[in-house]
Length: 219
Length: 304
Image 1: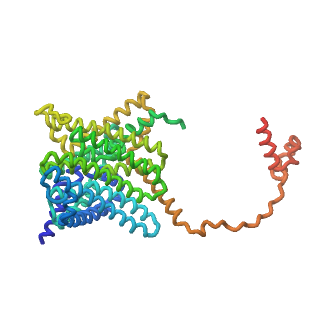
Image 2 (image 1 turned 90 degrees about the horizontal axis):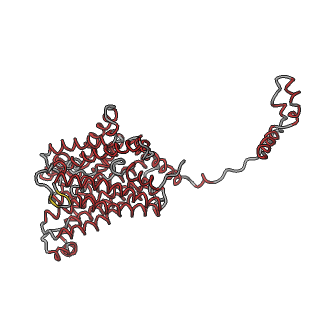
Image 3 (image 1 turned 180 degrees about the horizontal axis):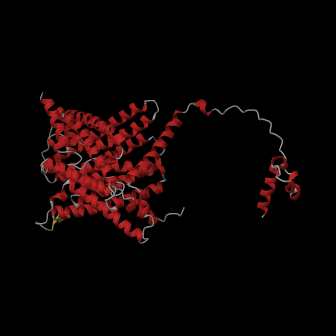
């Protein structure tokens, strides 16, 4: 029951409280690219959810296991003996390395699975979307944010991973509809049309989300 | 087509096709890492190294690889770079001695470093894999210049107006607009910078300083992106088709026996004269075939 509550908390944290894209500014470029293509928004968001959730859980498992291995833990934190800082367990850089390597393996596995599909337009599209989603998951860095929060709950990790995809979906849909309206608006001066208007619109949405979260940014 | 000069090429890459303000790539570092000018410049340097390394590798060795496999290489290169730079940063930050501060600092360093993989992947896929080494190196450097320019301006404004300081040196205590420090402030600033760039390009284009500014601003980046996507899609589809071709497709068809060619007809038989006067004025044509007539005409044209 606690883990289910933690899952919901994680999802709400990633989507609303600290929306990873608006409150953190993470993965914005890919979001803008995805927002231009209506047909691929759902697929990209779903893939990000899968990548984030699986990588967050795997990262949590591997990091916990490594921390419990006395020698590995000592070896990984050798330099803290030199600088005599008191840091428990693995540090951010090691978390980042483990996360990135796990994500790379997941990416390769997913592509291998797609590779064996019969040749079709969907196969090419899937290859491309898997790549974009994996890179965006790397930028969203859910496991690192979990580490920053000091959370070790698998439920929270899963919720935050799934929430990352939902956050991406909500933000992309909002920006997509905004782009559509902005394109049709002939009153916008030429200097502001295109990227400037989209970025300012995104900024205003981020302002609204930040206000909703009580004026807090992710960092 | 007139050949572009180096100056025009640099101008196009750095400003007309600015990676951040026109192509809208690399926005995450611009939001996270520009709250201080020093950090912005440090990230620009790291990004330039990463971009250069990736474009060189892509241009030299990855042209024949499939797109998804190339992405894995950019990914791996990004991991190595982010880890190395993050370790340096953490060791350096370790002197601070405050766990939370160091963790936060390192996280703020690691996240944009992760994002550099995305920038490198986009530039390599759009340019390096279709061009030679020299052009790729130039593209990487030019994009790095454009990237650094925007990062420096963002860092200057956000640190100056958000913190009231520059390079960590406090300038004012009263003028601190915290909004500039927040992510939404970064978005708004980027938007206004993009608009400023467009205004400058229009102004210079009207005065003939930049020749093709209008062309660059003709279509929104999303249209440009869509065009590139289509090209990539077609290239990938061609690759897939080549790989899926069966060996029997390549066996040449058996030679068919040649059909007997009809005897060439004289011109008079093909062109029936409308009146009897026609044949009287050009009597020699009756004796020539169409082929002979053409050969005669072409030979005459060559002689002249």
